[in-house]
Amino acid sequence: MKDYFQNQKGYALVIVLLFIAVVAIGTVTMYSYSVNSQKFINTSTASVQDKLRAERIMDEAIMKVQTGLEAINPTLTNASPIIDKITALINNVNASSGGKYNIVQTVTEDGQREGVYNVNATFTVYVNKNGKKLVKTVALSTIKDIFQYSAVSNGDFKLNGSAYLQGDVFTNGNLLSLNYGKFMTGNKYYYAPTSYPAIDGKLTVKGSIYGGNINDSIFSWTQVPKNTQNLQSIFSLAPVIKDRNTSFTPIAVSSIIAQKSAYPASGNKFPFYGYTSVWNYFLPMTYNTSETIIGNARYNSLVIGNNGNLTINGDLIVNGSLTITGNGKLTVNGNIYVSEAATLSGTLNLAQNKYIYINGKATIESFTLNGQMYVNKNADIQEDFNTNGTLYANTGIEVTNLSNNSGGTLVLICDGTIKVSNNNLYNDVPKEINAYFYSNSSLEIYGVGSNLKINGGVYGNPVELNAMKGKTNTSQFKNSFDKGGLWFENNQLGLEPSKSRLSIIFKNELIYNPPNGIPTVEKISMKEIEKHYTK
Image (cartoon, rainbow, N blue to C red):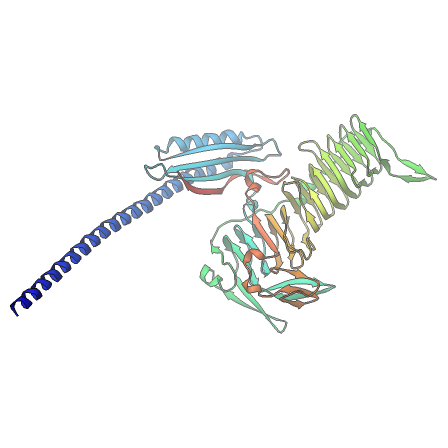
């Protein structure tokens, strides 16, 4: 019995010792964990504080440059040494940095292209002693402010259906968001159910915001408060609300076109290259082979045939119509003045900063333009229009089946209405174009049967975007529903916003590598291009 109790005491002692060991190990482990956690918290806190400090320093540097620009802008004229003033400003801001930041500038445009000035300024702030840096690049540019947004409306902004916008959006009027895509079949408009639109960026609305619905062909609209949380009810991807005190001065399109309309003072003395006559009918002068004319030239009407290749080493005046067909090619080292209409295919090459003025209508189809175009009436654009330039039109522009394969950015600027429809019809893969559409009147773009991705932006008064998501066809396909003679992919709500058949993606190149002929202003604005942390 005595041995038994002694054995039990021995077991108890072992258990007590094991318990003490476990507690000790746990205590050491918890202490180690606590120490490591505290180190992690301290490191994380230090990292956050370092980043906040770097952001404050970056904001300070940006504000100094912005303040400097506000002082420079009132002094600018057409003859101002703009680049010199920007350089002096950046040097002064660098000198006041106290070693906290550094700014390096790169001049990308020096005014040689019709008053386009652009300087990319890269700001660098050191985050910590390990070499981590905060880097931000901004563009200091004379390009108009409207080109810093994916979409601007000087009136109401109507979003019918599931359009997808990436970049900042501004509307001077009301914004109306509807979860139905609008389209036309025959002479009748239809509305097909889809999701609400998506904006991946910041939104400024000077008027009110309304969400819409349709019940038995009756529209109903509900006003929505201006905050991101409430906007989630009328956007498939809700933007961040940002109140900007921005105003946009419309481009004086008619005045710009009128400035280009005057013939050269000595135009009536240009050598006249006549016409062909058949049975007393006067026909246009036609070129089907290669020809070169030294100096200026004047025609009644001019046709460049499919195999024609005409070069004029001066200005060209056409006192009638101009036609370039098929693979025809016209090269002019001066300006071109056309008193009537122009029908343009093939290729037109102009010298740097030179242009073509067309007093009548311009019909463009599968055409390459190296230069600028000014149209006093309307322009109809079909198929390929390859250029890295700007077309101005007075009364209207209609765009169908547009492609821009040159790699440049096409800018269309109009006083009248712009309508973009029937582009890349019923295809599942979007057609990508680099373009900016600007209208002082209404701008209307369709992405229902069309499937279009615009890398650039839009401006109108008002703007209306109409879109569906996924597949669209004229005949039934698997998992589809019909409306107005078209068939649409089911589960519109479940499709990603990027599956929209109308996407507008802001393109930074409009600021730091602008197309030829893009409108400028006599002031310098600043736009953030890119920001990142690096070692």
